[in-house]
Image 1 (cartoon, rainbow, N blue to C red):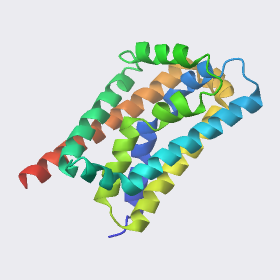
Image 2: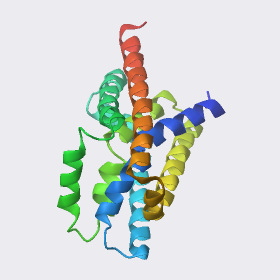
Image 3: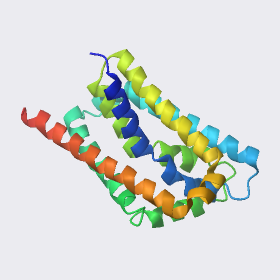
Length: 209
């Protein structure tokens, strides 16, 4: 059964929430501090392209990866739901729980010549939560057209991320840290609800409810 327009929109919202390009803006600005506009645009483009490549791989062959490790989809749904929940919880409080690790990651990568692949591409954009989301969605919707729709939503979210990174300084001056925190909290709330749904679906499938 092909995805409906409402389902595609729901997938887009879920991926936008888990990738959270708004929350990645401060990290992007910190990692590209002192870079020229052309360099920043190049880093933003490469980050989004690399993240998309990772999501393509897990969307198309994620099921084979699970089979290789003898992991059931039900177990992955529950485990993935926990991962997404833990990703959404610090977002709900605008990163107070994860700020130290993110700051250390920025310091660790600040001296690298190219930060577009790590940490921007992975794990900032295509992190555990995003990988879990596309893998679970691809298993729920096995038709090729459905998987292409999932990839289309991923591409659209990452296109938005690229545009936001490209105009990150102007956007940050416009809405400020408070505005970014508000958007991050909204994305975190959506993620927590999505995670609970994944966990409940996995439990229902396991017990045959």
